[in-house]
Amino acid sequence: MIKAAFKQGFMVLCAIYVALPIMVVCLSALNGGRSMLFPPEDPTLGRFLDFFVNEPVWLNSLENSVIIALSAATLAILITWPIAYDQWKKDTKFSKVLASLAGLPFALPPIVFGVGLSFLWTFIGGLGHMFTGILSHTALLAALPLVTISIGLQSIDRAHLDAAATMGASEGTILRTIILPQTLSYTLSGFFFVVVLSFHEFIVMFFVSASSYATVTLQIFNSLRNGFTPTMAVGAITFLIVSLIVFSLTARFGDLPRLMGADQARKD
Image (cartoon, rainbow, N blue to C red; front, side):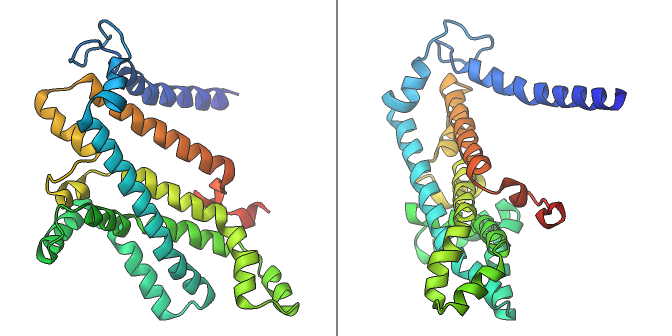
């Protein structure tokens, strides 16, 4: 009884520790002036209008963040799905090396990867272009869908594949009717994970954008020169909302326990 009460109390303290900074940021966005004060003075929703409607600099940065995140996530899925499928189906040395190379950038320190990409895009002539930012985030975050798709493929019951083959189904039919539907939630989970991390990522984008364009994270950094403003807090709230929506959808429609490393076989 005492141990359970202690555990509940500890969890409550952890929740408070996490919630308090979020509450401060959310309330700071309500300041009527241009200074980020807490508690807020002259509470208003005007800073939200500035972020989403009135100020072009924030609108452009938000648009850039959305374009880069969605494009990078789409490319990451298109690139890693064949790699994960080949490794699951053939498990050759080549497929293992290919999967390792796809996941390597995520294991590197972001600043090392960002500096390397900066030299690469400078040499090629693509530094500061939007498409290089998309490709950079694709390479950086490809490990996420690679892992989720691989987990999804490993969860497929081989008996279903054998039964389909016995009934005369071709490899393409098996892929379309069995493998793709059973791995759809894992594919979407990988897609949304890339969207969230790309939306939040700062270091790599700082190097490859070369100040030619700004995402929301870069715009927040640039705005720090003028001090903390309530509009920056709105940007932080946007990050929180996007993350909450994505992870809620993943928890609702995806196999979150398996994605988090739970041993489903042992549970069964």
